[in-house]
Each structure stands twice: as structure tokens, then as C-alpha cells.
Amino acid sequence: MDALSPSTLPRLHGSAIDIGADSEATHRERHALAWADVAAGARLWRLGVTLAWLDIKLKYRGSMLGPFWLTISTGVMVAAMGGLYGTLFHMDLKTYLPFLALSLVMWNAMSGLVTDACTTFTQSEGTIRSVRMPFFVHGLRVVVRSVISFLHNVPVILAVFAIFSIWPGATGLLCLPGLVLWTLDAFAACMLLGCFCARFRDIPPIVGSVMQIAFFVTPVVWRPDQLGAKGWWLPFNPFDALMEVARAPLLGIVPGPDAWALAVLYSAAFCAISWLLFARVRGRLAYWM
Amino acid sequence: MARIRIENVSVDFPLFHGSARSLKKTVMAAASGRLGEDKRQRRVVKALRDLNIELGSGDRLGLIGTNGAGKTTLLRTIAGIYEPVMGRIRVEGSLNALLDPQMGMNMDLTGRENIMLRGLYNGLCKAQIETLEDDVQEFAELGEFLDLPVRFYSSGMLIRLAFSLATAIRPQVLLMDEWFMAGDVNFLAKARERLESVVRGAEILVLSSHQTGAVLEWCTRVIWMDHGRVRMDGPAPEVMACYLAGKLPPH
Image 1 (cartoon, helix red, strand yellow):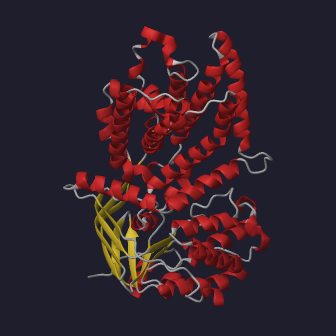
Image 2 (cartoon, each protein chain N blue to C red):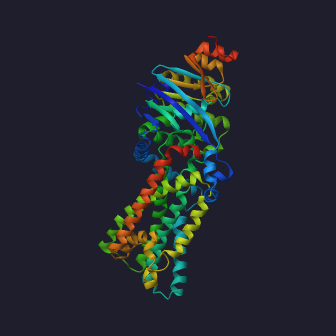
Image 3 (spheres, rainbow over the protein chains, first blue to last red):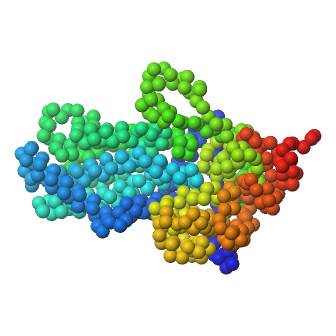
């Protein structure tokens, strides 16, 4: 029985569990436990990334083009919508199509993530009920999965930019802080919606319709300047600020300071709400599965 | 040094059914002023009540009791899956819980991929994961099935994979439910040998079982659970005798 010789088998070390619900200190302890969850989840990043890769692999297993179906369908959509809306809005395709390609790919990534975030915990029901695993790993899995899908759509943007020979230059680098905000918000969305949808099972369809409406009231297929003075309500749409800070630099425009301020403000509020909810319900999640 | 300390632990399960699962209905109930009433009347299952148990290195604890006595819930609580509503639980040392046969395996992934995920979960490095893979492959005798999705496995193969994987990792604290007794006869002798080696390697064992033989053989201390409480706690032979007779010893 050489397979059983202790030297060949992995031996686990360390890892302590300390969970309590003393009536005092509960509040502080909740935050400490939530923080420990996030830290432990981040340490298990290889697991989260692998889970995300396997999800993508599984989804496209047996199809010849694999995830490049995403690239093709996005390309077709951009071409079709570009032709249609370009005519409807009487737009110059040379400026409109690059805007649309970028906008649409970014919006698809955002709304895809939000929809996906709803099942962050419910899709891992089996795992949550059978082993203790940091909940943050599930969030990481969803975020990485979305990033992988997003990267498959990037060639569409590059192709359109190449066709119209557009290059944002060094200004393009300004999108990086915007993308950092996106990433933070993505994690916050997974933890927030994941918790909510674990408790209330009728939320995913509600989120779906909210995102549908958001698509129309956010400058995705139309440009904010088309609204002119009638667009006074745009600052109240968090999606607008977030889109703006990441999209404008890639089109060679420096986003205004108010777009930045709004994006940071909305993100901070969103992350704070998400944190408070996660810290509050983390210990109950397993009971809700 | 491994140690488990359970202080005044109680666990309640909320019973969500029908409208409690719906945001719309919950909001409507709140709006019509029915939520307060709802909250007081929220139905819970009192799964564990005021448990105080302390285990140190070398302890071999058996949990016995009828179905629904709280044995499995206690194991899951020690494993950190369910966090207690009251009390405190401390587990020092690495822990492995053999609770349900599938242990969160993804049925769409291949056996090999499931092994890799388990390795990553346990924080193993690449070389260690390869060792784990070899070990499981050899023990579970799955041959080329290891590269097929787990859903194509027969139930026997699935149990062999789950068992080999679960027992390939040697923890300091081992929690075990009785499912591991399943499996085909041929496998059972081999499985027993492997299980014994893991049990011997663990500093603390907590075993929940209906099979009195296994408990008497492996455990030195037995807790008889009843309705989420400890009914009797003591040396294995004494508690087992009382449990089988169905009554507490006269004082």
C-alpha cells in the first residue's frame, strides 16, 4: 500500500476556525469575520481563477469555436446596430461606430456581470453546504469569468478602431483608474446581489428588468451630447458616470472632473452598502442555501 | 496541537418556505404591517441546544442518536459550515470533514478537474496536486474514466472517487459521517485500510454513526445526542450500553 505512505499524501497544516456569537462584540466581530473571509478568499485566488476558467471551458465544451462565438456575435451585433442607429440618428459612421463598439462591449460586460452576480452563491449551493470556503472565492469566480468573456470581445473593438484608424494615444491609459473602479464595483455587486438573491429567490428577474431599463437610459447606443440640455438627469444615473470614466479615455477624450467625482462617489457608496450587507448576513448564507 | 472547544452552542434553522423566499411578498407583508408578527412567529428548527464539548489531541469521539438528533448538524457546525446563533466554537488545527459523498464535486467536470479543484481548495502547490492526482487515480481504479465528466460515472465509481479524494488529505481534525461505509465489497476492504490510516493520522476524530460496531471499534468517548442536546457523555462502552438499552443509567 505505497499510496498510503504518509510521505506521499498531502498533510494539511494550520487553519483555525473561531466563530462566536457573543452578544457583546458581535458587531465588531462581524466585520472582522467578513474581513477574514475576503482575505482568505483572496489568498485562494488560484482556486477562484481555475473555477472561472472551468466555467468558461464547460460552457463552450464541444463547440468548435469555443468562446470565440462571443466575439462573432458581438461583432455582428455592433455591425447591425451601427448600421441601424447610424441611419436613424443620422450619424457619421466614422465617429459613431467606434463609440458604439466600445460602448456596447463595455455595457455587455457590466450588465452580464450584474446578471451573473445574482447567482454568485446559489450556483455554488452544493459547495457551500459541504465545505467551509471563503464566500469571497465565489465572488472572485464570477468576476474573473466576466473578465474572460470581456477579453473575448475586445477584438471587436480593436477591429473597428483599426478599420476607422482610430488610436487614443497616451490618453487611453487614463481608462485604467476607471477599470479599477469597475473591478471594485464588480466585487461589490457579486457580494451584494449574491447575498440578496440567496435569501430572496425572486430577485434575479427584477435585476434583469432593471438592467434592461438601464440600457435605454444610459448613453450606450446614443451619445450624451445628443441630449443636450435635456440631459440634466444624467448625473443621477450611476451607470453613466462609470461608463464615461472608462470609455472616454479610450476614445481619446479626458473625462471631466465631475464625471470622475461622480464615479468615485457612486462606487464608494455601492461598495459600502455591499460590505455592510455582506458583514451582516455572511454567517447566515449557509442556512439560506 | 489540535483542539476543539464548543461553548454553549445553539443552532437554529430558519424554515423558509413559500412566501418567505419572495422579496415581493416580504415587502408587501411589511407594508401591510404584518412583518412584526411574522418575525415573532418565524418558524425555526432547534437543531442544537446549549452544547458544551471539549476535545483535545488523541480524543476519539463517537456521536450516536436517532435520526434528527443533531449529529450531522453538529459535525457541520464544527466544520464551520453552519455558524452558531449563540455560543462560541473554536477549532485549532487543520480540518477535513467527510460529510456528504459528493463533497461539492461538480458533476460536469472530469474527475481530474475535480481533484485539481480540491487540491487548490486545500492550498496545495502544483507538485502536490500532481501527487494527489496520482494517489487518487491509483486508489480509485478509475482508469481512463478520470478524464470523463463525473456525471458519466456509475454510482460505485463516484463513491470510489469521492472516497479516495476525501481520504487523500490527512487533517489534524477528522470529522466523519457514516456514508463512507458504502461502496462495493471489493473496495470496502481496501477502503477500510485507507480510512484506518487517515483516522490513525488524525489527532482528533469525531464520528457520527448508526453502526454501533464502528463506534465501539474506533471511539473511546461517546456522546448520545437527543433533540439537539447531549443526553449522555462518557466512555464508549458505557454510553453504548445505555443507548442500546434505551435508558440512562440509574444514579
